[in-house]
Length: 147
Image 1 (tube, rainbow, N blue to C red):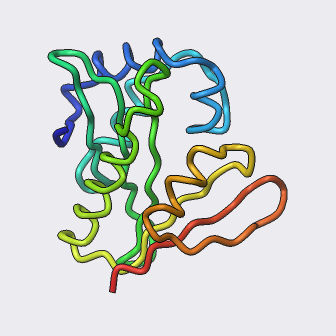
Image 2: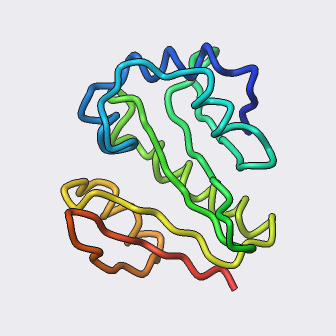
Image 3: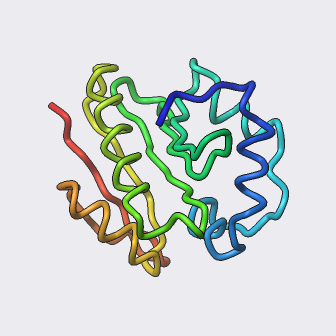
């Protein structure tokens, strides 16, 4: 696992292409097949957030995004794991690394907004100690208090 940069666009785009529409919907709430350079810059530019990727040799197989919110000390985290790598601990490792990075960056609160049908992410968030609340309209909020 390593921090990614805007130079990783092609490898991240290729990973998105290997993900099923269902996996993309779980991450982005849409199955849009193309992942644009603009989207990647929004996720990987340091002033807006941090992207962490997991790789197998030269191929990126998963990513975690930490997106800084407008409220100081708060961020959102989100994950995408290539289908072939799901249920192998990659998401858990990325989540732990992302939360460690949030603590090191001095963040107080980290959120994850997750579709209620995304049972894998619900299990992951709970296993790492997140507080949960249902938001309605098919969405759940998980919150980590890092203070």
